[in-house]
Length: 154
Image (cartoon, rainbow, N blue to C red; front, side, top):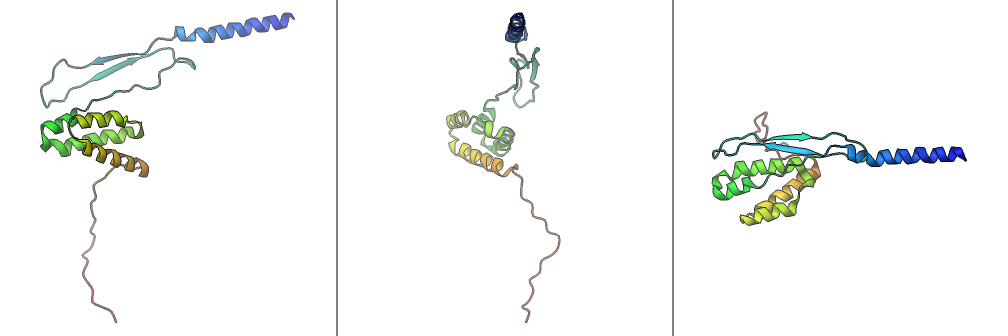
């Protein structure tokens, strides 16, 4: 009988320790360092400092997610001549995240600028590339010899 009481006390202590482990863990903290102002067309450095201590089975931080708004879409609306370069940048970002993208939010933003057709095109291209498992590459034919028409052989 005394063995069962000791076992119960030990199990209770273990559960108490595991249950309070979340209180020991430090909360995730993200500090963003970026310049207050930037001149148009200049590159800026945005630094994310992430700190977290006390990861365990109960309390942990898995991912840091950075959502970048559609400034490239806005740039296309403001200056249509930038469309090829900005569209290539947007597609490259889409390829990185693939199926994890929130397409409903992306569609809303494209619609604000009247680019719903562009969004649909990019979404289908992204889905196709994810399906076949490759990124879009420019087609460059390789010609290694001159092809001459040959006469009929009899």
